[in-house]
Amino acid sequence: MCIRDSDVTLDDVFVNGNTVDITARGDVLVTGVIADAVGDISIAAGGNVAITEAIAGADLSLSSATGEVVSSGPIAGDNVTVAAETSIMLGGNTTATGIVTLVSNDTITTDEAITAAEVSVLAQGDIKLNVPLDGEPADGDAIAETSGAVKVTSTGGNITTSGITTTGSVSLISTEGTINQVKDCLLYTSPSPPR
Image 1: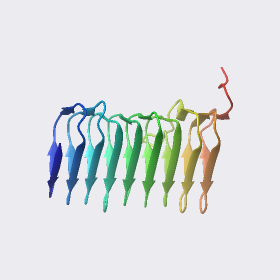
Image 2: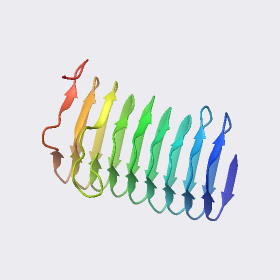
Image 3: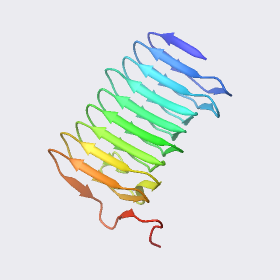
Image 4: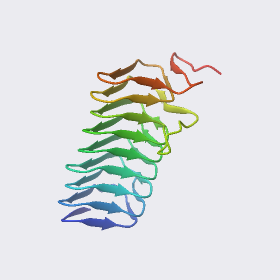
């Protein structure tokens, strides 16, 4: 399924084995579920990308050339890539069997956990992992059960995170701000997490 238009609004899209490719010069609004168990899903907007329900595909790519990417529901794929000129706000769980990559020229906020084999987060502004929009850190891990590297880098803001559990390495870098970890949360890099 391929859609190319100025602004795009979609409801539910269920396909099996086909690529879902949505490209808009303006905004993309998805008000329903997009699901493809074996096909790739790509949503690229010149403006904003807003997704209110779950989205799941093989490789999943969400990008905004001049605006923000906001997803209220869970997103999942073999590999998940989200890129935005301004902010990224992910309200549901983000799950990948491979790599989750989040890149923003402004801020990145996740309300729920990221679960993947490897996680890479890069922003020029603040990064808040598992910190709901009300600012109060949530319970549980921000990044859970990764087997590869976790790399979180802010080149101009602060990093705030709850726990991180991985059997790989963890790198949290803030070149101009602070790194804040939520009270009573662990950064854990061992073959098995504590009980």
